[in-house]
Image (cartoon, rainbow, N blue to C red):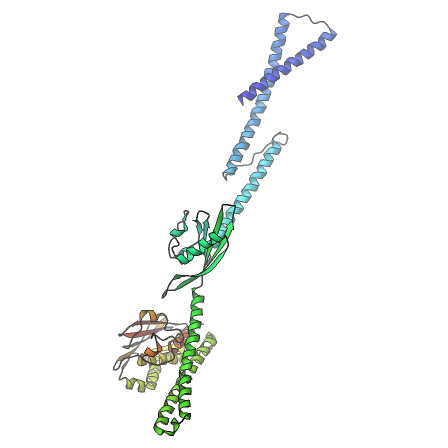
Length: 464
């Protein structure tokens, strides 16, 4: 600024000298000038005075202009650091008016773009936060730049918001292989990965998206979809087909085998004939029971809550009725049955469904009990629900089996040849469906060799 001012002053002095010389030449042309020292000094002083006045005027204008330029420069610096000072306002006749307008428009545009970017970032973070899919962004340094709560939940650990190597969060080989394959092939990958093995199985579908930002910079978006429920349904469907086929095949094979034996000549022996016909009758009944149970499940699933026929029932009367139908089985095992239900207890439920629930629970408590064991039936209630509990002193159920006993055809024994008691494996599945239909819950507490306690929880009042 100082050098520029000195240069301006010199130019103004030179300009005034030239103007003075030009004026002297013109005056000399019309009349003779009598030169003297005083005249020369006067002219020099006049030239210097004019130069000083012009320099002052120019300096003042230059100073104001420089202030405006400095404001613009400061404004541009602030804009580069995402700060937005007020607009620079200049009169329209100012030489820098157009430039100030351009800077103001640039600031308005950048402010709008910044606000839009911030809004989009907030929306993205909000979506990421509540997205049920686990998302993780990994850069070319294999560092985690972004992740959402769903990813932390799936990996069952907290993920640091500060950039760090993804291997600190992901130690499972199958998952790291998906990421490394994406880096190696520079293409998207997809795989089904089991995060947690049985019994608390958790299965996800891992998908990666490879994004090439430049020749040496890229990003990988890892997405984990929780497909545990789908996986379990598929597993149950496979088990259902396998178990149903086995359960159907066993009685049919027995019936066909003994029938063929009879037709081959065994029918001529009365004793053998009676023995084989009894086996055929038992297997036929087993087949009928199996079909009945499957049809019962289908009917329950087909019905909705509007098909419930709710009415007030004396619970003890219903339980006594079911116990009377099971007296033969109780006597065969010489069981002691304790009915601890108060005769005054009245509940609201669907009679047909509740009867089937009680029947199946009592049947299991008797069937899987030990000889001379005990069965206890208890009913309690609180302000909103009532509870039916059936306890037995039977063979019990292992902790692993308790997770699956309500599945169709599931049998707690690891092998059908080792099963102590025969059955279709559908009784508890039917109970669970019936309880769900009445908006209730069923729970189990059991220990191998000690016994089992089944508890059904149902609402006191009918749900609408």
